[in-house]
Length: 213
Image 1: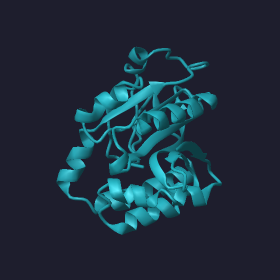
Image 2 (image 1 turned 45 degrees about the horizontal axis):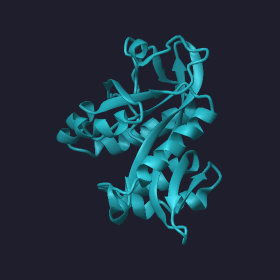
Image 3 (image 1 turned 90 degrees about the horizontal axis):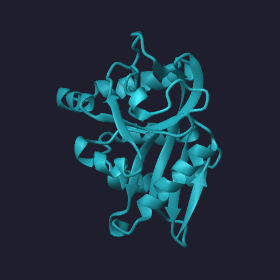
Image 4 (image 1 turned 90 degrees about the vertical axis):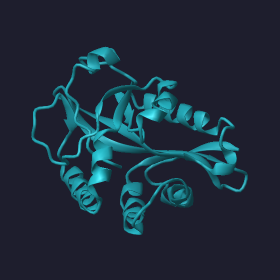
């Protein structure tokens, strides 16, 4: 077993994670998975544990967004598609992958990263890695409300949100209600030049997180 980091240009390596993605998540319409592996995979980084035959055993996807943080533009990553093959769970592989992912993000000197657990029940998993809940997920993809921390509305970001809105509109109301209950958890990485130095200070900020992937 070894850990690999598939960066932006390592498309083939990232495509090799698709079967693990489909194994672990309720993919619904295959159109969404096609969108993810056609579009999102081109711009993200994947940290993975692979076996001797290069089969992906465990993974986390690091999806980048340019954020305005109290007036300063900084890149941050959203951790998604966190999964381990069923036959390899409870062996510590996910912990090793998450550790490596956080080290990688720290090397980029990003201020923080975040994750949106599927429910409050699994928050404890991420708390062990230093994540803390700061707000709830937001459904409105194009909010103009005043936030302290929010994604910069670049052309790329707006196009991504249009795609996400398309898929969100296909969901029923119960799914949308469940999304709004999901906790947004943040781990501070490098607060140099940022006005907040602790999670407690961050909790006093108005934070906008709406992207599902």
